[in-house]
Image (cartoon, rainbow, N blue to C red; front, side, top):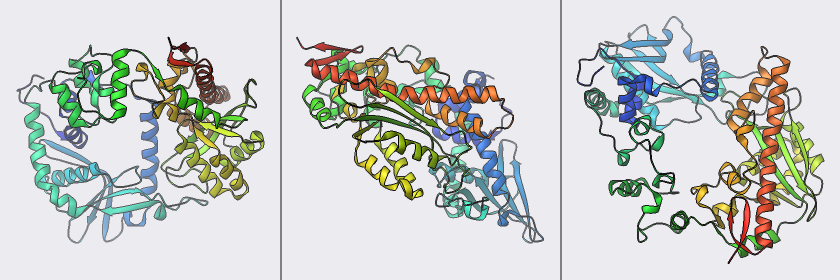
Amino acid sequence: MKPGAKMAYRLTKTAYLQFLKCPPEFWLQVHEPLMVAEPATLEHEHLRQQGYLVESYVKKLSRFQTNENFFVDFQKTYQTADLTARCDIVVLDRATNEVEIYEIKSSGSVKEEHYDDVAFQKVVAERSGVKVSKVGVVTLNTEYIRQGEIDPEQLFDVTDLTAEAELRLTATEDSIRQAFEYLRTVPAASLADYCTDQKLNCHYLKLHFENLPDHTVFDLVYLKHEKRRELLRNGIIDIVDIPDDYPLSDKQDLQVKVAKSGVPLINRREIAERMATWAYPLHFLDYETFAYAVPQFDGIKPFQQMVFQYSLHTIDRPGAEPRHQEYLSKGDDELALSVARHLRDSMGEIGTVLVWYEAFEKGRNEEMAAMFPEVKDFFEQVNAKTVDLMKVFSDNLLVHPAFKGRTSIKKVLPVLAPDLDYKALGIGDGLSATIKWFRATTWKTMTETEREQIYNDLLEYCGLDTMAMVRIFYELHKAVASGAEQIKNGRSLARS
């Protein structure tokens, strides 16, 4: 289809919301859909199945049952010559012939985009000749705790968005018109006009800017959008081209200086002082967790993280070889309680517990302590002795240009211990671990061979997370012990 040609095109709700987020990508999806088509990912399939399950419970709500006064329709489509909207729930008042429209969201709260979503549906329905008296959204009640069978009446919150949708109708009509006008143009490709959601992941920008520098201003941490756009409009893309006198935070300025010099920096004194406070035995701990919109186990809230696996590497004393302990629930035990008991019995003397991003592990420990009184004291002790190894990097005690301002373990590990590689694993990230564990423990169609392969992959993945922390600890220890001021490619370099 050539831009400017007459289009036999109906604007869908999904396309409209995409236009609001990123107009160039919306244009590309309409004019060159094959260029943005991507195969369904494991995450996409998982979310789709979760959405189906959520909808199945919404259909059990008493307010959405057809009776002598109301007719309830699910997945009803309204359309005009140029618009189409499929509505999750339509409730027809038989007496007035007016309808209520409800959107189902696998979310724990009402979000900004939900207002635009229902406003668009109201516009399309009313343009098609229907009187819409109310619009709303159905979300998960995150305070609901499952005990026994799911109670749909307690599982969901239904929020009336009618007043806000009414206020947005004029703006929605304008945005619909603008979307069609936009399709009749050819958007100018501009890095400075990136969308805040996608940034460089926008297909349109990828199409027009294929050979960007390796380290761009998009990598600069905590940079406000207006500052980034200012740099881009001035032709500054590479982080090393940022002027020395450009106003940046201390953290950003240090990142730029390290990128320009190409030389990693290490604060030997501060790292040594921190490490001196870490009492042995040192325990390197990592959890894998599962969270789902509809609680799958008793005592769990919607989206609550449930620990199903841990890996623990322990160094008992200085110079000792690390020893490894682990546990993986296969869904046939008391799940988080079995994990908690095994960890308590395995850890022994606590010393110091090192984790990567302490808010996550501490949060899970607090939840298990609240759920299971028998391990409450244990987890309180663990949290009191937990140290966040990531803070060595987030506090700028070790800054490497290859980190690109990031401090995730998957950014740090390849620099300090390049021989350890997540890419070679059957499971290489936390989301895949979550989804595959859920499938292995719940899918009846999976063979035992497939199931055991997933379990083995999970053990290997979680084990690498804690071994990665051990190796990073060793690299820090070598740098401090040798008087190094720089670290590069996993080797400590003495200051000249």
